[in-house]
Image (cartoon, rainbow, N blue to C red):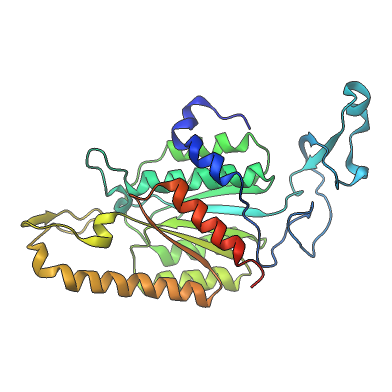
Length: 305
């Protein structure tokens, strides 16, 4: 698939090589036309023609474009916007807390989340699925990208992400409500966020998406500092979403802080498990190709359970 030069900084070739061997397959019943990868009770084509793709064994011969064959002596299938194995939406957090990690040599949570989102978009388009994008802070931002399956759509998604800068407060409950209202057809919702908000709102939002019939994946992006709290000397912490600065002696708070973070993270993970939501905790210092390959391989091994 052709990728614009400006988009290449979000797509690491090593990561793409590794994840291209894997698939994102719907484990639950979602709407979508079936060409062999996903099972679904829904059938039919939309009337909107999108593009051609090369014929592969198993394709319905009714959709071979014989006029193209007559000109080129090669078989191509007409593809329509509704001809998709899976319709997925990336829901990417661009709130102020995602700026954390701006020190030299570090990757911010925002940039790591962009890498995750672009790699997953590449993978789903590579397997001929349909992908869209929502960006959010307190609410869904303008610039949502509709779900399409054409290969060139990857550049549209990356262009929209590249034009964004993290900022603003987070309101996860209302955001998840808005996503549930915006996505009418059952599909796959992929949340990429640090989930720093009211725990009850996060859990309620996940339940809301599942109760609407969507399959949900959660990529919980946190900085290593947030997970280990390695600070030693007196430290001034700046609020990234309007909160006042706080000066503390980290060793005096470390154990209590780590207990709170573990309790919070475990509560989200357990709720996801209870709702049959795939959950992946991502430390920004972990190589993305390793993290995604491990997660997708484990997910594939659980398919159908």
